[in-house]
Amino acid sequence: MLVDSHCHLDRLKLDGYDNGLDDAIAEAKSRGVSHMLCVCISEENKDVVVDIARQFPQVYASVGIHPCDVKENVVGESDLLAWSQMPKVVALGETGLDYYYSKESERQQKESFARHLSAAGTLGLPVIVHTREARDDTIDLIRGEGNSESAGVLHCFTEDWEMAKKALDLNYYISISGIVTFKTANQIRDVVTKMPLDRLLIETDSPYLAPVPYRGKSNEPKYVREVAEYIAELLNISLEQVAESTTANFFRLFDKAKA
Picture 1 (cartoon, rainbow, N blue to C red):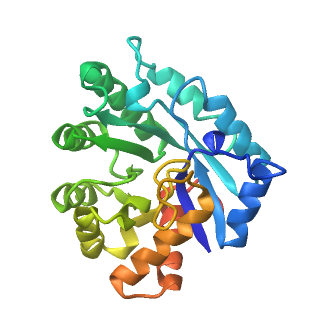
Picture 2: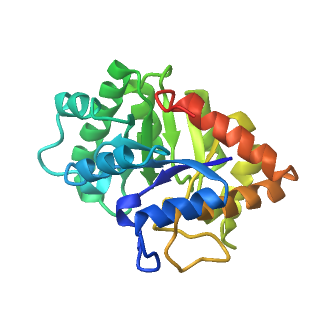
């Protein structure tokens, strides 16, 4: 079975399904996707994310503030600790740093990221990290503020092997999305070929970044299978090996989730 380790179920386009999200999740199950992690990006959508996880046994939730959603008044660590007590929450995030879209809020992003890392260390929860054009600051904050025991994941990884290796050395996992199937994704493919299989996760980041041959269409958790199939071919191993390893890795990292 496969796990979609990062998706935004509250944002899926469900026009093609008579029964909405029920059908989308059933469709994913029919393609071998046993579980998925619905990821929060803001205080405004945390209740919706958690409610989805409560409705569906195969869905888990995270709570946190995406770096592009960080506001002038940065979320308090006490708020993060309180949100983490909501049902089926297995991680904090997504948090991190994005200097591509939101360089002007660098100070607030760093403060928010540090608070997520600190709260996660207190709770023993993993952190879901978004990073874009902020390699050094991301690693420095993880090293300085993070808990290597509970650690976390660099999701939808698009950076180079040097950064991946630094994250692995800090006990982090690397998650690969459908971007790996894009023609221009040579850097990501290089990372995948060098990755230890026991630290690899797969995701859709749906409704964004649909893999080939669905690129340009709305993404869904069912397409995590295409990511797994591509990685299996890239590594010259079986789909079953990719599925078994990435599923075991998911439940090892997000150890509050139950298979």
